[in-house]
Image (cartoon, rainbow, N blue to C red; front, side):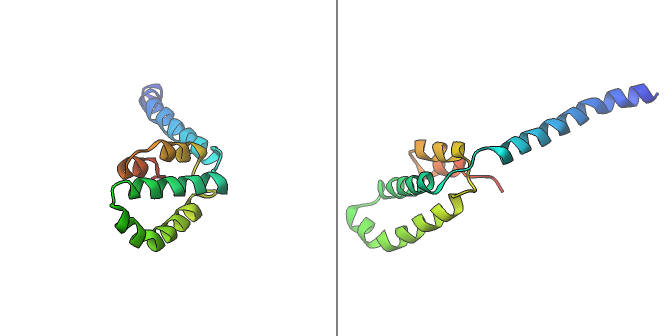
Length: 103
C-alpha cells in the first residue's frame, strides 16, 4: 500500500520540484541594467507616440517623460535581460505588456 501511495504522489512531487526549479531559474536570470532600461523606456515612448498625431505627442511630452522615468526605475535591477529584449522587440503596447513580469 505504501508503494502505491508513493507512486501516485510521485508525479505531483516532480511537478512541484519543476515549478520550484523554474521559479529559481527566473530569480537567478541576469537582471537588466540602467542603460538597457533607458533604451526600453525610449522604445516604450516611441511605441505610444506612433499612434498619436504630432501635436498630441508634444502636449503629452511632460507626462511621457515621467512615465519613462518610472519605467526605468521599475525595470533597473528588477526585469530580466530577456524581458527587456522582449519589450524592445514589441511593436504594440499589448506586446510590451506581455513582456512584463507577472505579479
